[in-house]
Image 1 (tube, rainbow, N blue to C red):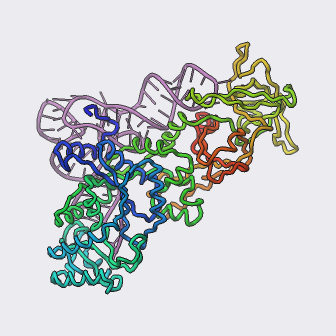
Image 2 (cartoon, rainbow, N blue to C red; image 1 turned 60 degrees about the vertical axis):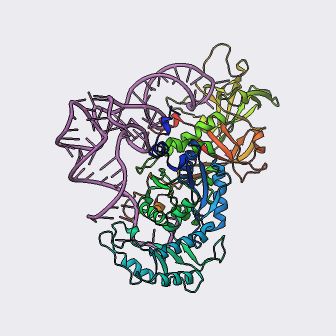
Image 3 (tube, chains in turn orange, purple; image 1 turned 180 degrees about the vertical axis):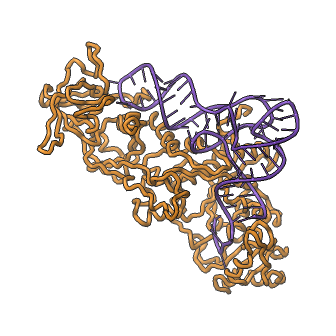
Length: 559
RNA sequence: UGGGCCGUCGACAAGCGGUAAGUCACAUGGUUUUGGUCCAUGCAUUCAGGGGUUCGAAUCCUCUCGGCCCAACCA
């Protein structure tokens, strides 16, 4: 406890440490994640979830999941189910504390009545346009509503009738009576309730008035006994109002603390942009593996652990920032390097014939499943006269630093033999059809008894034993780092990467992979980490590339 | 421009008056039957800029510059 983990140090933990020292909240720490069920979760939400959850855990506190379902026209049960599923997968645990703002509608109503009785709220009958106009601007004060001085009894009567459905949408609103000349726009008699004759996904048509965020949110936190209400920076201006309502009501007041949202470069994170991509069919759906949605990342092959690690590395602060996508990639490689079984697969096959190898002979070669994990053991891989190698592993006229196969050159076929390329067979167009090679029987296992060295080790697969598969390769969705900072007149839609998805349908896999279940992850040696897509069937396996391996050769070539 | 918040390496980010952590990225070398992993090394005499307080300032004061948020009956 004295040895505080410095990597986790952040200003929120400092505040909590101090609160604990002062004995606030009787030493309780209780956080929450309050999504509105109006869209799908993305990695930015993962930060909010994990910041709240990890703090609750580390301080021996509690963490609630609460749906902030106060606006029925935008919300749907479909989203609540998807969100629950995503958070469970991510690994945050709310135990038995799943709540809905709509659970509190009755209490909120009673609190509103209390505020009216205290003379701190009134029914306003101005139109939306009048309210907007009378609010003033950031530099000029607003003016009081002509309905501001209605009597308490009239307010009570009107508010009750609003609730009873006697008025049309927009006829009246309930407002807090604060200060129309406050420099903080949010304190200029903020709205508390609006009339909406819209059925709610949980309360049906029981209610036709719905509480507005500022009124609802603090009460939700208060009612649940939240101690630290952690949210994003744009709510800073709301904090005085959050405090005002709870102080006026004389109820438990959690402390709202704001931190910066997560931004990632070369992608989009806003609900609006994500929706646009989905609706215009630029991606296959909310779970398209190119999307930073949790369902997309899951389908892409990310693990919850990788996302947790990533969020820890990103940290928590108040400065706006855009995190490098490379950090996310590093986070998943770090996990998969330790866990993923290795397998030899050829994405872009080039046939090789070993001319001095007996026809019909098949050898079972021992291959290590994971050099990072001795317990993973070995497997048998069939070796035969006809093999596939990666097309990029051969060059007829290799440049200086190219170590792989070339005419007359000897390389190692991993775990098998030293192989020398003797002849290149081409079609009439000059397209390379196959390579004629020889093997050195003495080099079995990939070692030469005479101490001869080769500069490259290639992966390979037996033609006869390989299974065909489709492999989907993904690249960044957006070609520019920051879509919030574009050239005049351009939108993010002008920077969609046309090559963000490449489908390879003639890939050759080790046979056992045909039986792998969707979600199964492995490393294709020398190529990257891959996982089985839900579209996959034993007849037609489909793999997604989660991320490439670090590739210093590719980097050299790009220079 | 009223109010609120922010500015530490290419990207994140610690630091809380005692002389710039860490991670990613990048670079170099070593190991290697994955051009992977791993290991080693390098990468901010300086904290947006100026002035001030102090024996001592990224940390305190002050001014300037730059960025973000707030005028939905959204959250």
